[in-house]
Image 1: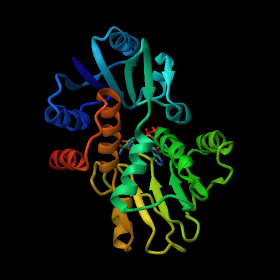
Image 2: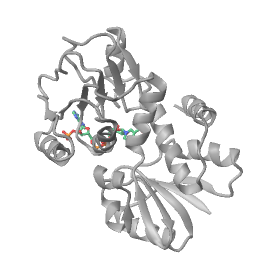
Image 3: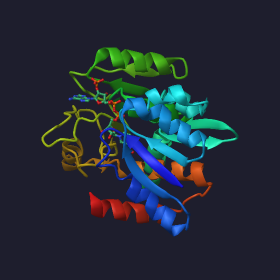
Length: 275
Ligand code: NAP
């Protein structure tokens, strides 16, 4: 049997390295591969899961949203995120879940020893990853959330989507990019920072040095956004731990195995070497 991560482009995906490390450790008779596919082939791959020719898939850009059309039953998280990154077949149905937000929360809680309850949060970006993260923040009884995004319309859509579940979510000005005083955590969920020289410039005024700067980008290991924050004395974390932890949740959905912290560390060491 096989598992795939599908997307376009896909050649830089670290998911096969991560999953094959655990598949080997737990002696499971499957192989995890990457597959670049066109939009036209989404239906076919879902049919292969339905006919149990494929055990399941991870879905990445640009198909996380459009794949929802082919899913019979979505988890509440996938519904709230309006996106699916993990697909499997169970009890005659194609299931879709989204593990990105949970992976992010776990990463910050475990690696930064951070408790989200009542915390003030500033999010940069209103794309798929921001939806996934916000859907989970809602469950953590966080304090006020402020969101900034380059495209105003997408920011409006995101804030309106979450407003009914969280009344204290607010739009923040993109051109000023100023987190409120005493913000506890600032999260970059945009893809801006993946290329050399791309810097998201934050106005640091009013922040204390207990503020955490999180970037969900993991390549480069340190974006300019994180580098600047580190040099100002703030605590920082990149997206690699999130990537491993969201993968661990997918692994559990497929195989029912709860991975250990040592399994997480082993996968992280492998990715660190590959990055
Ligand atoms: P997406 O849906 O395409 O959203 C992209 C976001 O980036 C939007 O907010 C977009 O703003 C913003 N953006 C893009 N180019 C920009 C620019 N030049 N200046 C300012 N903002 C810009 O993508 P996504 O799925 O949310 O993923 C975003 C990033 O998260 C990617 O780098 C992805 O690899 C990473 N990610 C990491 C993990 C992990 O496990 N670590 C998981 C998921 C995603 P506009 O609305 O203005 O276009």
